[in-house]
Image 1 (cartoon, helix red, strand yellow):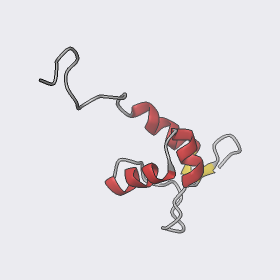
Image 2 (tube, rainbow, N blue to C red):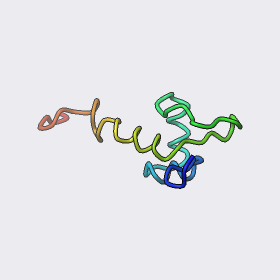
Image 3 (spheres, rainbow, N blue to C red):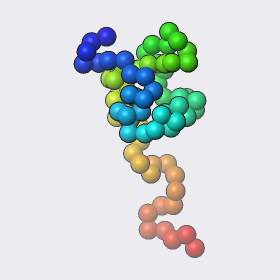
Amino acid sequence: MTDDDPLLAYPEAAAVAGVSVRTLRNYKAAGTLPEPDDDTFPDRPRWHRSTITAWLAARPGQGVGGGRPPGRSSG
């Protein structure tokens, strides 16, 4: 580990991702969050900052995969 790629616990990883800790925990429970880089303590997983930023870059954008197509009314 280097100073420019620290290990992040839930609060720090959630801040990088711009979501709440609860949301990040839900992503982990759903299997959409990458495997932890350090799971020495299973109830306290940690990820390198680079792991979280790579995961964010690979995620689809907001609104992808659901909802009503643009220009369509609900009724």
